[in-house]
Length: 275
Image: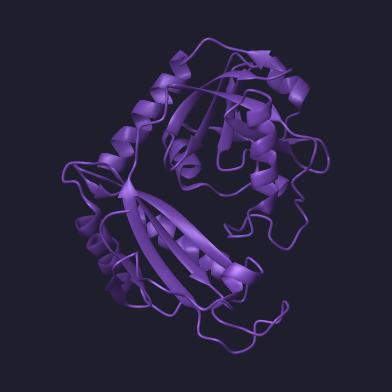
């Protein structure tokens, strides 16, 4: 890794950056994070929305973020400048953990750890294949809708998806409604509507998801895998994928892509991030 990382207010070389072995982000997955993209032409995209969500996720864990937004913006720009190369699209991650704490789940009174890092982001391919997984997202769970570092469930799901020949997994909620991927929100054209699962399914309120809803007017409603199989277009959204067509949900349906609505949605997203 090139460049520097920002740890608790200071830029340091990643080869010497150090955290306590008792940091709760490491021992129990107690933390939250955000991933942003910085583009050569426009800089950081939708930073305000990402920072709002970071603080919302932290509040959901009763975790204080010990730096204000202006300090985090400075940190992101510093690591972008350090990581280079010039003219590259950069992926920036802010991670906030519970800090060094006692053994077990009790956090204690430690000061949270904050890390900001950046690296070049390669472009995703134009289409994606999804694999449904047998485990549901728990829409009633304490972490529903929060962007936490507790990603073991996603790791297992993505491993299963890869074994099936897909590059992303697809979860339903406990009631059998389509929910989300491990790091993506899903949209489908069903009948004459562009639809996406509502937040009541436990899906993350993705920043890109919100932009597409705002630009295109997608309808948030419940739908099943059977409904998804009747869709005429499917796409996923995320910060790094932006708007990516889905060519197959294994066992559910296949599509040619990107279709006309996917193409328009991607164009609308691109215009919004440049605004």
